[in-house]
Image 1 (cartoon, rainbow, N blue to C red):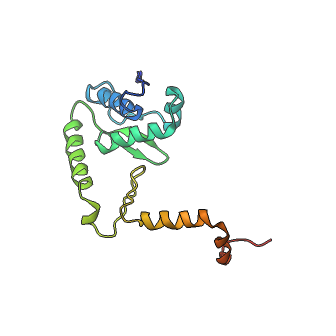
Image 2: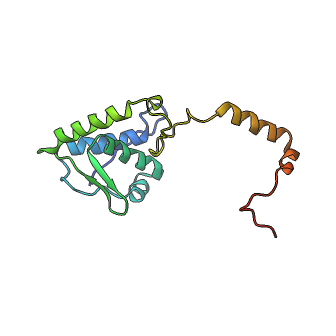
Image 3: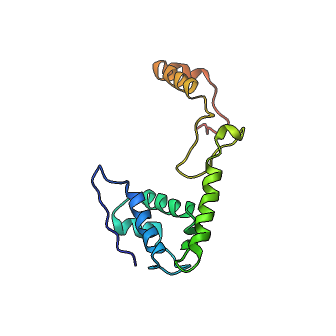
Length: 154
């Protein structure tokens, strides 16, 4: 079991990076076994008194570095160990970094589906903001649109 020490000062490193860094340190120093399961995100968030999203982001960082693998319903398992898999984990991390460095403009029509990394460059933000402001200024104009197909009538 990993003992976590979190610095909760506002100027400190974000909590998810602190959690990921401490787990990574334990993996790279051989203090955890290969294929060992990390605590569930719910359990660890309760234990550390942080949001579940914070723990999920920490696990995402570890997976992107190639140190862990996450499987829905099975949990997050360590896939690198001090004995041999660290070099392969580093190569895997470098490959993922190369893929992430491809700009969205290089892949026309592509949208990132990574959690917490939404890409909004393809959205017409200015036009949406203007339309939203018009509706807020003149809410009566919403009535000129008909009822949607999915709106139940009572």
